[in-house]
Figure 1 (cartoon, one colour):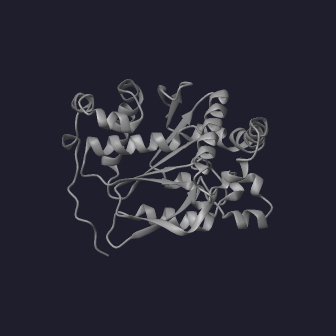
Figure 2: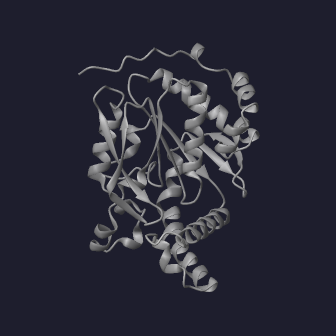
Length: 287
């Protein structure tokens, strides 16, 4: 087995915090794309990323896997993307990828066959054989000739896209995000593969409000996308739509949060607390 020839990074190869802030201050495009203010970055994301980078430097012989979790609609993907961008800003030579655990859900066909469609996102709804195979391969993915297939879950169709996958080759760092990532499930737990762990926390009322906003965004998009799962809601009245939102939130998402997602917060090394407007309130180091 041959290996990628990569330069050995040290802390001297990285931007300092002051250098990073100076660069970001003069990069309006980056700040706009990151969807966070400079204060958010200074208070939460910058200290987090420098800590992650130091951990990576101590474990760079294998793919460094960061697990990030939180409720549905908490902003996991947005924060994961910002962390990826900051890490590559600190050192542009790094190959950093974001992977969602949503792609490892069972297909809707299988969920319906097992009568667990209403528990989608719960621990019982994942393809653990495929998930384990991926995580085992991911640990050594920075070696040559290892190409990992990543299944994709579509928010529009609300299903795993069977014939459309992504591929991942030789990443240095992978941010693996999803509602189940920090859960110590049996017989297979993702925790043993994670080198760093993060939980995104927010008030219950804010989470529901953000879920509603995302629902309406997808509903608007469905007007021009006949394949969208949300087409079936277009004929409904505003009251009927709100009833549907409340039913899904309280019977599925909030129940999953209380029973499975929130208890996994104790497994996180870092907790990012969010304000009601999605800005970042503070970063807590638990361990």
